[in-house]
Length: 229
Length: 389
Image (tube, chains in turn purple, blue):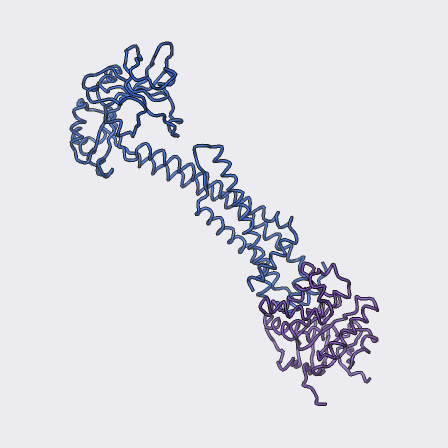
């Protein structure tokens, strides 16, 4: 099997925060490579630099040092507007607390990233419905988040992340707010998506969840190491 | 994108209807104040101007203050009428007298004049005829009554041929004027009787002409000049001997006053619109803080600063324009009611006022929406996502 090209390539990434005059090295020379089609988990306890890594990987923040290449483009000191554009095309976020807009229907939420991509209405509806179909919620498209269960809300969030066909799905503790049975369903969905060819990065502190992924990366004190399976 | 922003703004506005309405209320009140006040002034101005025009906008009035021992007589007026610029000239003497018929009597203003007066003043007859030149020449004891005077004295109007007494002299009624329902009739009121100038001057013991009405043959200004030069020649170039005025100078003064008035009232209304705008800014700032999480989510999935800015700006603009729309509807209703009550005057909204209100509201929405929208756009996505209201 041919080795797929890297989607994410990080080398010596550092991120320093200044908290009350003190220097905190949240990331201290983190390097990792994620290839297309991989299902990777990043594990680490709180305070390990996990969130910082996710923020940089998701282009919500920029590193202070090192090199980050996402889908062939080097993420450097881009303007906020450009970073927003990159997030929109390359990243599909799935959050622990779903982060759906409660005013809108499931379909409206899934359409949102496509709106920012300026996809035409008919096209947009089609793509959003297709994404809802993939997570098995096509029949709930007219419901608002409050009318859906936690698991269903997370499925809508996953559909929203999938809608733009991003380079990677970046899931931050996606099962953290769900009971174990529902969490199991969501993990099965991720596995399905992985089998269908999507690249998924899952950030968690839960070893059991991490074990469901193809490859585990551990982060500790701002440094990254591979877990042998 | 704009269409999407409008849809998003609409969703945000309708998701909290009471708050949106209260925010709009400031603009609604401002717009109503602006439109109603300006329209009322415009309506009143229009009505007054119409009345002035109906009085004969081109009529010239000459008042003789000091005749220098050589008073103006009817023959002088005939001479004045020889001028090509002058169509007609009529003397106007007036006195207050008691008119009687049977047991009814009325205190009336008695005008002594000539037949020319009828055309100059634009009068209209209901019955009979107006004064004739022969009436004046012969000093006939004939009278033309206003509609109200006939009604008051006789209880009916068609009284041509009947007799009345004015200050104990007997007159024959030869004509009745049409009912005058104009604003000025109501304002000046009273009962009027027209008799030959020669008779009136004798009764009033005022043998000379002190007031003359002139109607121009063509251009009012040219006529005014002709009258002026005639009078100057007549009174040895003494400009203080007489004064000339016409209705257009009165209506000019009138429009200056009402113009200032509507500017003043409009200015006050504009201040209330400004207060409405501050209300919008206040609520938008609260809304931006409340929706920090939403902004974070939108930014995470790819909304740039511009999109967020646009969304909130359009929301502010929409609130103020919807307020403006409601304000215009309300103004239209109020003006309709005022017109119904006022009766003779129609108060309508002019396109100019509507455009002014819309323009002003948009400007206010934009100006006061800018700061909150910018605040929303500048939020950092990570901080915004972490925000828990």
